[in-house]
Image 1 (cartoon, one colour):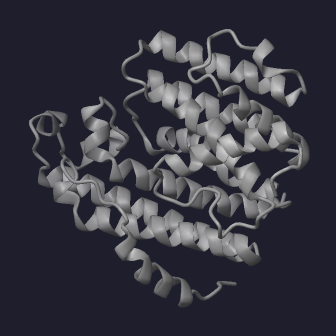
Image 2 (spheres, rainbow, N blue to C red; image 1 turned 90 degrees about the vertical axis):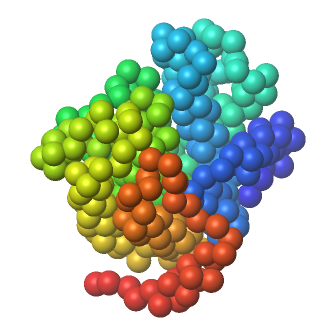
Length: 302
């Protein structure tokens, strides 16, 4: 629920506006969530969204992007400690109202008792996006997901009042699956931006060659490599499915919608492997009936 304090309400409204204005594959602070959670999820999203924008800002030199992320970290720590974030900044704010993000986030961290280490993990992954464009093994990719995706699921659980190791474990699985799905979905776009998330171990074993991608050829070895990535990701979705049954009420509906949406995109990646350099599989409003039908057929697992 939006707080009664006008200044704080304005800060949360700014974060909610960011969540509405940015396209994402999966719902962010949607109406499926309990009303009391929505402002806090919007504040977390706004913090992460802006930091991700810094990491991806190709018009800036890498050193400048890293300085912006360091500045975001200084402001985070000040907010968490109850100090004014504007006094902690070392770089000008990218948008004049971005200080409102930290006003809302400070309240969210305090009200929900959120570990600052989870936000630090996110920032470390964004820094890695600036400096790392290739991954040698699955272990390397999964370590990135551990910091770029898994903290989000844990933060959502903490906002809902849940702090259980067994629930964290299955949340990590589905968050990693969602992150990997986004990698394969953005395969062509990421490659044109200079990034390749398919582990070298996978594509080298399939006999693939980066020069084919550079020439615009999605060869049979690359299709094989993507197929292995899809299988890996699907197993993580299966393991992470249990998080949807470990919560209740509106949060359960939100997590099931997210799980089904991610799984459907993964199916489309697998079906359109030959086109991934030029085609980005997505969901559209026309998919809503299929997702609702799948949600209605959901059966909880033991």
